[in-house]
Amino acid sequence: MKLKTLALTVAALATALSALLTAPSAYAQAKEQFFPLLVYRTGAYAPNGTPWANGKQDYLKLINARDGGVNGVKLTYEECETGYATDKGVECYERLKGKTNTLFDPQSTGITFALTDKAPGDKMPLITVGYGLSSSQDGGVFKWNFPILGSYWTGADVLIQHIGKKEGGLDKLKGKKIALVYHDSPFGKEPIPLLQERAKMHGFELQLIPVTAPGVEQKSAWLQVRQSKPDYVLLWGWGVMNSTALKEAQATGYPRDKMYGVWWAGAEPDVKDVGMGAKGYNALALQHGADRNAKVVQDILKLVHDKGQGTGPKDEVGQVLYMRGLIIQMLGVEAVRRAQERFGKGKVMNTEQVRWGLENLNLDQKKLDALGFAGVMRPVSTSCLDHMGSSWARVHTWDGAKWGFSSDWYEADEQILKPMIRAAADKYAGEKKVTRRAPADCQS
Image (cartoon, rainbow, N blue to C red; front, side, top):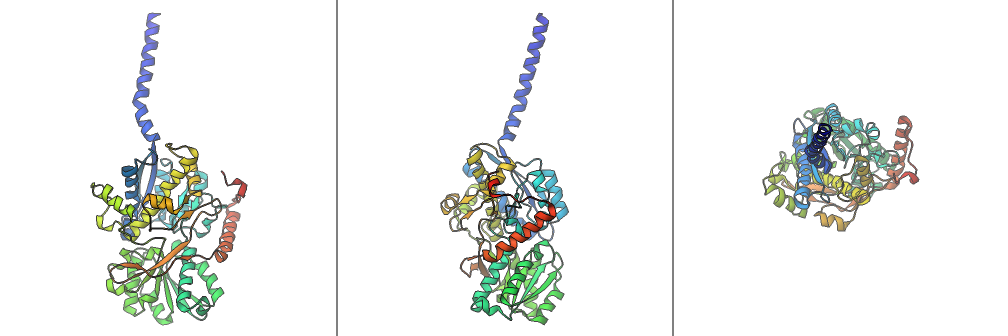
Protein backbone atom coordinates (compact mmCIF):
# COMPACT_ATOMS: atom_id res chain seq x y z
CA MET A 1 0.00 0.00 0.00
CA LYS A 2 2.83 2.35 0.93
CA LEU A 3 4.52 1.71 -2.41
CA LYS A 4 1.28 2.43 -4.23
CA THR A 5 0.76 5.67 -2.28
CA LEU A 6 4.36 6.71 -2.97
CA ALA A 7 3.92 6.04 -6.67
CA LEU A 8 0.75 8.11 -6.78
CA THR A 9 2.47 10.94 -4.93
CA VAL A 10 5.42 10.92 -7.34
CA ALA A 11 3.04 10.94 -10.31
CA ALA A 12 1.11 13.86 -8.86
CA LEU A 13 4.33 15.79 -8.23
CA ALA A 14 5.48 15.10 -11.78
CA THR A 15 2.20 16.39 -13.17
CA ALA A 16 2.40 19.51 -11.02
CA LEU A 17 6.01 20.12 -12.02
CA SER A 18 5.12 19.70 -15.68
CA ALA A 19 2.29 22.22 -15.30
CA LEU A 20 4.63 24.69 -13.62
CA LEU A 21 7.20 24.34 -16.37
CA THR A 22 4.71 24.79 -19.21
CA ALA A 23 2.44 27.39 -17.63
CA PRO A 24 4.73 30.45 -17.99
CA SER A 25 5.20 30.05 -21.75
CA ALA A 26 1.53 29.27 -22.25
CA TYR A 27 0.60 32.30 -20.16
CA ALA A 28 3.03 34.52 -22.04
CA GLN A 29 1.59 33.38 -25.34
CA ALA A 30 -1.95 33.87 -24.07
CA LYS A 31 -1.20 37.48 -23.08
CA GLU A 32 0.20 38.49 -26.47
CA GLN A 33 -1.63 40.03 -29.40
CA PHE A 34 0.35 38.95 -32.46
CA PHE A 35 0.62 41.11 -35.59
CA PRO A 36 2.05 39.48 -38.73
CA LEU A 37 3.84 42.14 -40.78
CA LEU A 38 4.03 41.44 -44.51
CA VAL A 39 6.80 43.68 -45.86
CA TYR A 40 8.99 44.29 -48.89
CA ARG A 41 12.36 45.61 -47.88
CA THR A 42 14.00 44.13 -50.98
CA GLY A 43 13.48 44.56 -54.70
CA ALA A 44 12.23 47.38 -56.90
CA TYR A 45 9.61 48.54 -54.40
CA ALA A 46 11.84 48.57 -51.32
CA PRO A 47 12.38 52.38 -51.25
CA ASN A 48 8.63 52.81 -50.71
CA GLY A 49 7.85 49.62 -48.82
CA THR A 50 10.58 50.11 -46.21
CA PRO A 51 9.44 53.38 -44.55
CA TRP A 52 5.86 52.09 -44.60
CA ALA A 53 6.99 48.94 -42.77
CA ASN A 54 9.15 50.93 -40.35
CA GLY A 55 6.22 53.09 -39.29
CA LYS A 56 4.09 50.03 -38.58
CA GLN A 57 6.73 48.36 -36.48
CA ASP A 58 7.64 51.51 -34.55
CA TYR A 59 4.00 52.06 -33.58
CA LEU A 60 3.78 48.61 -32.01
CA LYS A 61 6.97 49.36 -30.08
CA LEU A 62 5.50 52.67 -28.94
CA ILE A 63 2.30 51.09 -27.61
CA ASN A 64 4.33 48.60 -25.58
CA ALA A 65 6.77 51.24 -24.30
CA ARG A 66 4.31 54.06 -23.61
CA ASP A 67 1.14 52.20 -22.66
CA GLY A 68 2.31 48.75 -21.61
CA GLY A 69 0.38 47.25 -24.53
CA VAL A 70 -3.40 47.39 -24.91
CA ASN A 71 -4.85 47.26 -21.40
CA GLY A 72 -1.90 45.13 -20.33
CA VAL A 73 -1.83 42.86 -23.39
CA LYS A 74 1.60 43.01 -25.01
CA LEU A 75 1.83 43.45 -28.77
CA THR A 76 4.20 41.15 -30.65
CA TYR A 77 5.03 40.84 -34.34
CA GLU A 78 6.97 38.99 -36.98
CA GLU A 79 7.95 40.27 -40.41
CA CYS A 80 7.69 38.19 -43.58
CA GLU A 81 9.35 39.42 -46.79
CA THR A 82 7.14 39.35 -49.88
CA GLY A 83 9.17 41.41 -52.34
CA TYR A 84 5.72 42.75 -53.41
CA ALA A 85 5.17 39.41 -55.16
CA THR A 86 1.69 37.91 -54.85
CA ASP A 87 2.88 34.31 -54.59
CA LYS A 88 5.32 35.17 -51.81
CA GLY A 89 2.63 37.17 -50.04
CA VAL A 90 0.33 34.15 -50.06
CA GLU A 91 3.18 32.00 -48.72
CA CYS A 92 3.70 34.46 -45.85
CA TYR A 93 -0.02 34.41 -45.11
CA GLU A 94 -0.16 30.62 -45.02
CA ARG A 95 2.88 30.47 -42.75
CA LEU A 96 1.64 33.05 -40.25
CA LYS A 97 -2.14 32.70 -40.28
CA GLY A 98 -2.08 29.98 -37.63
CA LYS A 99 0.08 32.14 -35.40
CA THR A 100 -1.86 35.38 -35.48
CA ASN A 101 -4.88 36.19 -33.33
CA THR A 102 -5.30 39.63 -34.87
CA LEU A 103 -5.37 40.47 -38.61
CA PHE A 104 -3.33 40.80 -41.80
CA ASP A 105 -2.27 43.94 -43.66
CA PRO A 106 -1.31 42.43 -47.07
CA GLN A 107 0.52 45.64 -48.09
CA SER A 108 -0.28 44.91 -51.75
CA THR A 109 -3.41 45.01 -53.88
CA GLY A 110 -2.36 41.86 -55.73
CA ILE A 111 -1.88 39.95 -52.46
CA THR A 112 -5.21 41.32 -51.21
CA PHE A 113 -7.00 39.97 -54.28
CA ALA A 114 -5.42 36.55 -53.67
CA LEU A 115 -6.38 36.52 -49.98
CA THR A 116 -9.93 37.86 -50.28
CA ASP A 117 -11.31 34.43 -51.16
CA LYS A 118 -9.32 32.77 -48.37
CA ALA A 119 -10.18 35.19 -45.56
CA PRO A 120 -13.79 34.07 -44.84
CA GLY A 121 -12.85 30.40 -44.46
CA ASP A 122 -9.89 31.29 -42.27
CA LYS A 123 -11.90 33.92 -40.34
CA MET A 124 -9.08 36.36 -41.00
CA PRO A 125 -9.59 40.16 -41.14
CA LEU A 126 -7.74 41.99 -43.93
CA ILE A 127 -7.05 45.66 -43.35
CA THR A 128 -6.23 47.47 -46.59
CA VAL A 129 -5.91 51.18 -45.83
CA GLY A 130 -5.99 53.11 -49.11
CA TYR A 131 -5.61 50.08 -51.37
CA GLY A 132 -7.11 46.71 -52.28
CA LEU A 133 -10.53 45.95 -53.70
CA SER A 134 -12.63 49.14 -53.94
CA SER A 135 -15.95 47.30 -53.73
CA SER A 136 -14.91 45.73 -50.41
CA GLN A 137 -16.20 48.86 -48.70
CA ASP A 138 -19.49 46.95 -48.81
CA GLY A 139 -19.40 45.00 -45.53
CA GLY A 140 -22.60 43.23 -46.43
CA VAL A 141 -20.66 41.09 -48.91
CA PHE A 142 -17.05 41.53 -47.82
CA LYS A 143 -17.31 40.67 -44.14
CA TRP A 144 -13.54 40.28 -43.66
CA ASN A 145 -12.13 43.12 -45.83
CA PHE A 146 -11.57 46.62 -44.45
CA PRO A 147 -10.39 49.32 -46.92
CA ILE A 148 -10.41 51.89 -44.12
CA LEU A 149 -9.94 55.61 -44.99
CA GLY A 150 -10.14 55.20 -48.76
CA SER A 151 -10.03 53.08 -51.90
CA TYR A 152 -8.80 53.66 -55.42
CA TRP A 153 -12.32 54.66 -56.44
CA THR A 154 -12.49 57.33 -53.75
CA GLY A 155 -9.01 58.54 -54.68
CA ALA A 156 -9.83 58.79 -58.38
CA ASP A 157 -13.09 60.55 -57.57
CA VAL A 158 -11.35 63.17 -55.44
CA LEU A 159 -8.79 63.84 -58.17
CA ILE A 160 -11.51 64.48 -60.75
CA GLN A 161 -13.29 66.78 -58.29
CA HIS A 162 -10.06 68.71 -57.74
CA ILE A 163 -9.26 69.04 -61.44
CA GLY A 164 -12.83 70.14 -62.06
CA LYS A 165 -12.51 72.82 -59.40
CA LYS A 166 -9.27 74.10 -60.96
CA GLU A 167 -11.03 74.35 -64.31
CA GLY A 168 -13.88 76.35 -62.80
CA GLY A 169 -16.41 73.54 -62.46
CA LEU A 170 -16.90 69.92 -63.45
CA ASP A 171 -18.85 71.05 -66.52
CA LYS A 172 -15.65 72.64 -67.79
CA LEU A 173 -14.09 69.17 -68.15
CA LYS A 174 -16.13 68.56 -71.31
CA GLY A 175 -13.76 68.11 -74.25
CA LYS A 176 -10.70 67.83 -72.01
CA LYS A 177 -8.28 64.92 -72.26
CA ILE A 178 -7.09 63.13 -69.11
CA ALA A 179 -4.48 60.38 -69.36
CA LEU A 180 -4.06 57.65 -66.76
CA VAL A 181 -0.46 56.39 -66.67
CA TYR A 182 -0.83 53.28 -64.56
CA HIS A 183 1.08 50.33 -63.14
CA ASP A 184 -0.12 47.39 -65.24
CA SER A 185 -1.35 45.31 -62.29
CA PRO A 186 -4.52 44.97 -60.20
CA PHE A 187 -3.38 48.08 -58.30
CA GLY A 188 -3.08 50.23 -61.40
CA LYS A 189 -6.26 48.97 -63.05
CA GLU A 190 -8.47 49.45 -60.01
CA PRO A 191 -9.39 53.17 -60.58
CA ILE A 192 -10.38 52.67 -64.24
CA PRO A 193 -14.14 51.93 -63.69
CA LEU A 194 -14.58 55.10 -61.64
CA LEU A 195 -12.69 57.25 -64.15
CA GLN A 196 -14.76 55.80 -66.99
CA GLU A 197 -17.94 56.66 -65.10
CA ARG A 198 -16.75 60.22 -64.47
CA ALA A 199 -15.71 60.56 -68.14
CA LYS A 200 -19.25 59.64 -69.24
CA MET A 201 -20.74 62.11 -66.77
CA HIS A 202 -18.55 65.09 -67.67
CA GLY A 203 -17.60 64.47 -71.27
CA PHE A 204 -13.83 64.27 -70.98
CA GLU A 205 -11.71 61.80 -72.93
CA LEU A 206 -9.93 59.17 -70.82
CA GLN A 207 -6.68 57.83 -72.24
CA LEU A 208 -5.31 54.64 -70.67
CA ILE A 209 -1.53 54.17 -70.77
CA PRO A 210 -0.27 51.02 -68.99
CA VAL A 211 3.32 50.70 -67.76
CA THR A 212 4.84 47.26 -67.34
CA ALA A 213 5.99 46.52 -63.78
CA PRO A 214 8.19 47.57 -62.10
CA GLY A 215 8.18 50.67 -64.32
CA VAL A 216 11.83 51.38 -65.02
CA GLU A 217 11.11 51.55 -68.77
CA GLN A 218 8.51 54.16 -69.73
CA LYS A 219 9.79 55.65 -73.00
CA SER A 220 6.82 54.38 -75.04
CA ALA A 221 4.31 55.57 -72.43
CA TRP A 222 5.63 59.11 -72.43
CA LEU A 223 5.89 59.11 -76.20
CA GLN A 224 2.11 58.57 -76.15
CA VAL A 225 1.74 61.44 -73.69
CA ARG A 226 3.83 63.73 -75.89
CA GLN A 227 1.82 62.82 -78.98
CA SER A 228 -1.66 63.07 -77.44
CA LYS A 229 -0.94 66.17 -75.32
CA PRO A 230 -3.45 65.45 -72.50
CA ASP A 231 -4.64 68.34 -70.38
CA TYR A 232 -3.83 66.32 -67.24
CA VAL A 233 -1.94 63.15 -66.38
CA LEU A 234 -2.99 60.94 -63.47
CA LEU A 235 -0.10 58.83 -62.22
CA TRP A 236 -1.07 55.50 -60.64
CA GLY A 237 2.41 54.27 -59.80
CA TRP A 238 4.39 52.66 -57.03
CA GLY A 239 8.07 52.36 -56.25
CA VAL A 240 10.62 53.21 -58.93
CA MET A 241 7.81 53.81 -61.44
CA ASN A 242 7.00 57.16 -59.86
CA SER A 243 10.42 58.81 -60.00
CA THR A 244 10.93 57.38 -63.49
CA ALA A 245 7.64 58.93 -64.64
CA LEU A 246 8.64 62.32 -63.28
CA LYS A 247 12.01 62.14 -65.01
CA GLU A 248 10.35 61.15 -68.28
CA ALA A 249 7.85 63.99 -67.93
CA GLN A 250 10.72 66.40 -67.43
CA ALA A 251 12.56 64.99 -70.45
CA THR A 252 9.51 65.25 -72.71
CA GLY A 253 8.54 68.67 -71.41
CA TYR A 254 5.22 67.67 -69.87
CA PRO A 255 4.32 70.18 -67.11
CA ARG A 256 4.62 68.61 -63.67
CA ASP A 257 1.91 70.91 -62.32
CA LYS A 258 -0.51 69.11 -64.65
CA MET A 259 0.38 65.75 -63.09
CA TYR A 260 -1.59 64.25 -60.19
CA GLY A 261 -0.54 61.07 -58.44
CA VAL A 262 -2.48 58.65 -56.29
CA TRP A 263 -1.42 58.64 -52.61
CA TRP A 264 1.08 55.85 -53.38
CA ALA A 265 2.81 58.20 -55.80
CA GLY A 266 3.16 61.15 -53.46
CA ALA A 267 5.92 60.51 -50.93
CA GLU A 268 9.57 61.47 -50.44
CA PRO A 269 11.09 58.45 -52.28
CA ASP A 270 9.08 59.41 -55.38
CA VAL A 271 10.53 62.90 -55.72
CA LYS A 272 13.80 63.19 -53.79
CA ASP A 273 15.96 61.95 -56.67
CA VAL A 274 14.18 64.28 -59.09
CA GLY A 275 14.36 67.32 -56.79
CA MET A 276 13.55 70.57 -58.55
CA GLY A 277 12.66 68.58 -61.66
CA ALA A 278 9.54 67.46 -59.84
CA LYS A 279 8.60 70.93 -58.61
CA GLY A 280 4.88 71.54 -59.00
CA TYR A 281 3.98 67.84 -59.07
CA ASN A 282 0.78 67.06 -57.15
CA ALA A 283 -0.46 63.94 -55.40
CA LEU A 284 -3.23 62.83 -53.09
CA ALA A 285 -2.60 62.69 -49.36
CA LEU A 286 -4.53 59.91 -47.62
CA GLN A 287 -5.88 61.84 -44.61
CA HIS A 288 -2.37 62.87 -43.62
CA GLY A 289 0.88 64.35 -44.82
CA ALA A 290 4.41 64.51 -43.53
CA ASP A 291 4.16 65.73 -39.92
CA ARG A 292 7.30 65.69 -37.81
CA ASN A 293 5.59 67.76 -35.10
CA ALA A 294 2.69 65.42 -34.38
CA LYS A 295 2.61 64.25 -30.78
CA VAL A 296 2.65 60.58 -31.79
CA VAL A 297 5.83 61.23 -33.79
CA GLN A 298 7.45 63.01 -30.87
CA ASP A 299 6.50 60.12 -28.60
CA ILE A 300 8.15 57.65 -31.00
CA LEU A 301 11.30 59.73 -31.21
CA LYS A 302 11.51 59.97 -27.42
CA LEU A 303 10.37 56.51 -26.33
CA VAL A 304 11.56 54.36 -29.22
CA HIS A 305 14.32 55.98 -31.28
CA ASP A 306 16.05 57.81 -28.43
CA LYS A 307 16.18 54.46 -26.62
CA GLY A 308 18.01 52.92 -29.57
CA GLN A 309 15.01 50.78 -30.55
CA GLY A 310 13.91 52.54 -33.74
CA THR A 311 13.28 50.37 -36.76
CA GLY A 312 14.82 52.59 -39.45
CA PRO A 313 16.58 55.96 -39.90
CA LYS A 314 15.52 58.56 -37.37
CA ASP A 315 15.24 61.27 -40.01
CA GLU A 316 12.48 59.41 -41.89
CA VAL A 317 10.18 59.42 -38.83
CA GLY A 318 7.25 61.66 -39.71
CA GLN A 319 7.65 61.41 -43.48
CA VAL A 320 4.68 60.53 -45.70
CA LEU A 321 4.97 56.75 -46.01
CA TYR A 322 6.23 56.36 -42.45
CA MET A 323 3.12 58.21 -41.26
CA ARG A 324 0.92 55.96 -43.36
CA GLY A 325 2.42 52.87 -41.77
CA LEU A 326 1.87 54.49 -38.39
CA ILE A 327 -1.79 55.16 -39.11
CA ILE A 328 -2.41 51.67 -40.50
CA GLN A 329 -0.94 50.10 -37.38
CA MET A 330 -2.87 52.45 -35.13
CA LEU A 331 -6.14 51.38 -36.76
CA GLY A 332 -5.26 47.72 -36.15
CA VAL A 333 -4.36 48.38 -32.53
CA GLU A 334 -7.53 50.38 -31.98
CA ALA A 335 -9.57 47.51 -33.44
CA VAL A 336 -8.10 45.33 -30.69
CA ARG A 337 -8.91 47.97 -28.08
CA ARG A 338 -12.45 48.34 -29.37
CA ALA A 339 -12.92 44.56 -29.32
CA GLN A 340 -11.74 44.46 -25.71
CA GLU A 341 -14.46 46.93 -24.79
CA ARG A 342 -17.02 44.33 -25.79
CA PHE A 343 -15.28 41.03 -25.09
CA GLY A 344 -13.17 41.88 -22.05
CA LYS A 345 -10.50 44.45 -21.24
CA GLY A 346 -7.09 43.00 -20.64
CA LYS A 347 -7.93 39.86 -22.62
CA VAL A 348 -6.30 38.65 -25.80
CA MET A 349 -8.71 38.92 -28.71
CA ASN A 350 -9.13 36.34 -31.47
CA THR A 351 -9.50 37.16 -35.16
CA GLU A 352 -13.30 37.12 -35.08
CA GLN A 353 -13.33 39.54 -32.16
CA VAL A 354 -10.79 41.81 -33.89
CA ARG A 355 -12.99 41.72 -37.00
CA TRP A 356 -15.85 43.02 -34.85
CA GLY A 357 -13.53 45.75 -33.57
CA LEU A 358 -12.64 46.81 -37.11
CA GLU A 359 -16.33 46.92 -38.00
CA ASN A 360 -17.17 49.06 -34.99
CA LEU A 361 -14.38 51.60 -34.90
CA ASN A 362 -15.38 55.01 -33.60
CA LEU A 363 -12.32 57.23 -33.53
CA ASP A 364 -13.64 60.71 -32.88
CA GLN A 365 -11.37 63.73 -32.59
CA LYS A 366 -11.06 63.40 -28.82
CA LYS A 367 -9.78 59.82 -29.14
CA LEU A 368 -7.40 60.74 -31.95
CA ASP A 369 -6.03 63.63 -29.90
CA ALA A 370 -5.47 61.33 -26.91
CA LEU A 371 -3.54 58.90 -29.14
CA GLY A 372 -1.28 61.71 -30.37
CA PHE A 373 -2.88 62.10 -33.81
CA ALA A 374 -4.21 65.64 -33.41
CA GLY A 375 -3.93 67.44 -36.74
CA VAL A 376 -2.80 64.25 -38.46
CA MET A 377 -6.08 62.71 -39.63
CA ARG A 378 -9.84 63.14 -39.59
CA PRO A 379 -12.20 61.04 -37.43
CA VAL A 380 -13.25 57.66 -38.76
CA SER A 381 -16.23 55.50 -37.90
CA THR A 382 -16.95 52.13 -39.50
CA SER A 383 -20.10 50.02 -39.51
CA CYS A 384 -21.45 46.70 -40.70
CA LEU A 385 -22.26 48.01 -44.18
CA ASP A 386 -19.45 50.58 -44.41
CA HIS A 387 -16.01 49.05 -43.95
CA MET A 388 -14.26 52.25 -45.06
CA GLY A 389 -15.56 54.73 -42.52
CA SER A 390 -14.13 57.84 -44.18
CA SER A 391 -13.31 58.91 -47.73
CA TRP A 392 -11.71 62.31 -47.28
CA ALA A 393 -8.46 63.34 -48.94
CA ARG A 394 -6.39 66.41 -49.79
CA VAL A 395 -3.87 67.27 -52.48
CA HIS A 396 -0.29 68.14 -51.61
CA THR A 397 2.36 69.58 -53.92
CA TRP A 398 6.14 69.17 -54.10
CA ASP A 399 7.97 72.52 -54.01
CA GLY A 400 11.35 71.05 -54.91
CA ALA A 401 12.32 70.34 -51.31
CA LYS A 402 9.21 69.32 -49.37
CA TRP A 403 5.52 68.46 -49.62
CA GLY A 404 2.91 71.07 -48.71
CA PHE A 405 -0.89 70.92 -48.79
CA SER A 406 -2.35 72.74 -51.79
CA SER A 407 -6.08 72.05 -51.45
CA ASP A 408 -8.89 71.89 -48.97
CA TRP A 409 -10.43 68.57 -47.95
CA TYR A 410 -12.53 66.68 -50.47
CA GLU A 411 -14.97 63.88 -49.78
CA ALA A 412 -15.62 61.26 -52.44
CA ASP A 413 -19.10 61.56 -53.96
CA GLU A 414 -21.22 58.76 -52.52
CA GLN A 415 -23.99 59.35 -55.07
CA ILE A 416 -21.57 58.04 -57.70
CA LEU A 417 -19.74 55.51 -55.58
CA LYS A 418 -22.57 53.73 -53.77
CA PRO A 419 -24.28 52.30 -56.87
CA MET A 420 -20.92 51.21 -58.30
CA ILE A 421 -19.87 49.56 -55.04
CA ARG A 422 -23.22 47.81 -54.63
CA ALA A 423 -23.20 46.50 -58.21
CA ALA A 424 -19.60 45.26 -57.99
CA ALA A 425 -20.18 43.65 -54.59
CA ASP A 426 -23.34 41.91 -55.81
CA LYS A 427 -21.48 40.63 -58.86
CA TYR A 428 -18.73 39.23 -56.62
CA ALA A 429 -21.34 37.66 -54.32
CA GLY A 430 -23.01 35.98 -57.28
CA GLU A 431 -19.77 34.62 -58.69
CA LYS A 432 -18.49 33.36 -55.33
CA LYS A 433 -21.89 32.30 -53.99
CA VAL A 434 -21.64 34.65 -51.01
CA THR A 435 -24.86 35.45 -49.14
CA ARG A 436 -25.20 39.16 -48.44
CA ARG A 437 -25.55 39.92 -44.73
CA ALA A 438 -28.82 41.45 -43.66
CA PRO A 439 -28.73 44.39 -41.20
CA ALA A 440 -30.03 42.02 -38.53
CA ASP A 441 -26.88 39.91 -38.96
CA CYS A 442 -24.58 42.82 -38.25
CA GLN A 443 -24.08 42.07 -34.59
CA SER A 444 -22.18 38.87 -35.39
